[in-house]
Image (cartoon, rainbow, N blue to C red; front, top):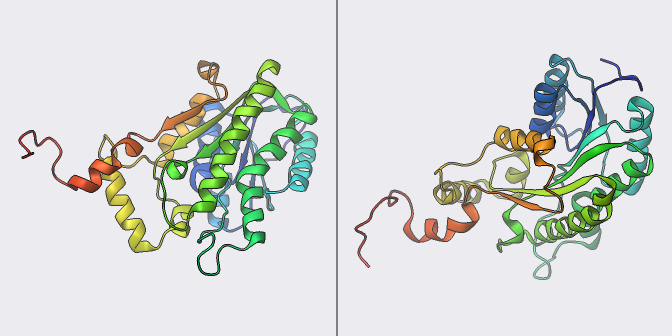
Length: 283
């Protein structure tokens, strides 16, 4: 479908729309709300991008997917200009920052992560959240009570080798969310951070070796109070809820959507599988 500036449907801007949480969110807001989707991806998952387009258009909405690196100020300006021409002012009801492109490795020991890798990681995973928010706001693209949402994980609460850059970018993202909420709240906009637990995605597979990811999955499954991992559709459903008026009082919040994983992972390490409900454990 092709879009026109007079299209009455609100738009969702999804950065990182071809895989993982971004893809699930794009399809869900189109199905559940009938919203159009402006998605950006780097072309690494063409099958995922095609599936998103098919799902959004099957819901009767417009899907405008752009293949470029969203992680720079220039990209944000160009994307916002394209969206202004396509959708017009006051059209964006939701922006989701689901970019997952960062470097892993140690900071000092051995070769360490190169400075250019650190800079690129911060641009994509943290700074671009500010760049896109600013570009949308400057052009009057944000609809009344628009939801601007960053996605985070448990890395800011734990230490896992080789993930220092991930943790640092997510910590920066959280601070950006708080300050943007303070700036934009009086204008009627909402800025929040959704922090969910382990979901096996292409990003997590790229972060951890297969054996380590299998161990992590087992531990976090045991740690979650429901004894299972969250899935992408559950994340997308909650984002869809946040986009609505029922969630209007969330602003500047870091929302815990971890299912208890961060609270009980140490218990999972100590006691392992099969011990839940054992009230007669010897002390």
